[in-house]
Length: 294
Picture 1 (cartoon, rainbow, N blue to C red):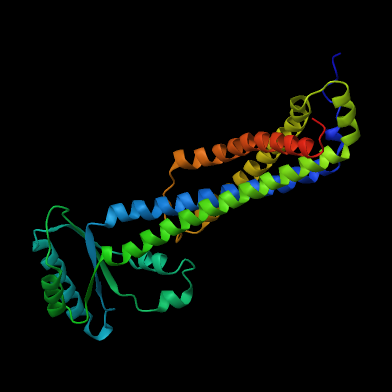
Picture 2: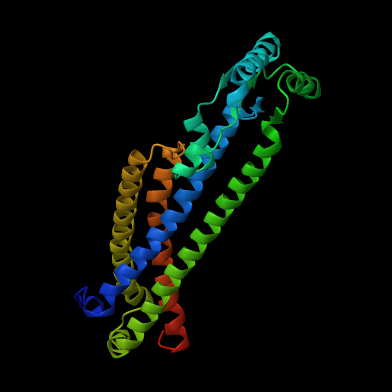
């Protein structure tokens, strides 16, 4: 005898609606954690790749009373860098760039604060430069000048980026665990609510796979709707962030690995749907065995 597919009325459960939204928000959080970690790590690594061969020279703010002397000393520093064979390129950072990298708000107080002169220097990767010697030469030309190697403080940023990436993966795994726990609980609840129907089906000859398939389809549909909600909320968040970044010129430039981000956006929901099917089936099997129904 062929039974109707919806013989177990799981779709009529009042909890299905709010479960879709709860799981959707949880999936959105998973996408937010992992994509945010990927973007942050990609930005730091790309910036490190562009600036790993070099150093920066910081000159004290110009004194208005001795501006001509400071300008002459600054010219001497630039000539010294130009004459060094290990220096490939250099440029003086603008005040707006310095403010943008030190404070995203760029308020009036910072605008009135004396800004040091920062020279970004790129060196040849295959050449060795004597930093102690060049530091002494620059200090003699411009008193109070400091020379800092990029790798001295980039290592801390790389460690921070790696830590944030690992934290994002951990939070994503935690979110997936919470989602699967909700699916398992809802499957167990639905099975107990319709236990009389399940008993009748088993007495009519239905096996545990037949029962599990009904719950698997319901769980898969719920997770699919939740994934659409999560991806939709993610797209809204991306649009808002892009709109804010267009209005804030002082925001740092982000490096987005589009392949990894797209894989995360579509891979996480698909992986969750796959785990949902397995979790729902295992829950049904365990409950039926404990009840000694089949």
